[in-house]
Image (cartoon, rainbow, N blue to C red; front, side):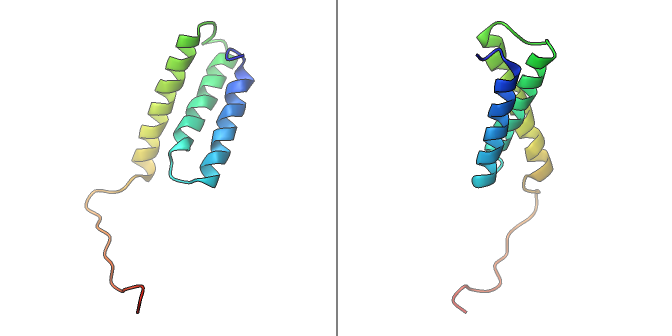
Length: 88
């Protein structure tokens, strides 16, 4: 079942839906990793062993997380300043 490309793509879209419901760029990296793994299985680059699929998923998810962190992460030197109280 794990060597079927559409299982990875559907799982990636499901994780994307979870990210919409609970935002925070946590599940989005896993969703991108699953879709990339599904595409690699679909074009025939990956296949067969479960360990290769899990390794590809882990590396793609990690790369996606780092890319998302660079694009949307906090900028250095920015400090949140509170200038009014919620009780005012």
